[in-house]
Image (cartoon, rainbow, N blue to C red; front, side):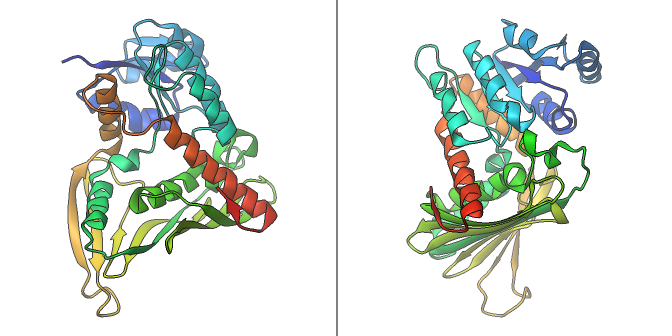
Length: 336
């Protein structure tokens, strides 16, 4: 079976520990090359994962005519420049989130993204949308079993006060909204199957890093529907998604960092008895959400399925983040 020949920009931790094993497990992917800022680093990772080709620069990998698609896990502020460079070289790109530093930057890729002559497929890497637990929860919502959905609530946090960590460097796009806020936004858009019309944000910034360490938001999706979330880089590690309807509520236990290759759980409760005594647990089959994401993107490139999400989706995520930052600065509702 024909496979998509992938090149990876950088030996980032996420690539080494999670993504490369997932790609190599996919029947649609061949990891052909990896690049780093030094050839030594690239060769070390290539040897560890039996990747045939190593490059000491991103430019060299992008110029390789044997590469069909690029995975871009570079720092946030480098996403657009290298995605654009790869796309101009005719490579399709799966780019880590956040896709850019703002919507204006993301729109620059309109030049190369699409389906016409000289265009390539570009997608933002929100792997959660491919996990069976998200798809099952979406199916429950669509079935009407929860009634009319009134609210989606998300909490996502971890604790990181390392001054040298890129997540705490404002110049590289660090902070809670950029790093994990996108997951909450995607949850609202995914389960409500709508777009927010206005947003309100409360942002607390670290006095030394100047990144947002805790951000809370209310997103108005119209027709009485809302998403509210808190994301934090300096709280006890925790994550949950709650979908609350007029008949029942649904809870996803570990919605974002589900263990690869392990079963997951969703919970439903009609609230007739307070507490969790009557909560029903549904076990979702074991899955690797990263492998499923690469399956879906690669199958689209092979012409076997439509592209699940394109540039418009990524731009919309950034418009919402832009509006949230603007709301936090102005202390008022902000239209999206």
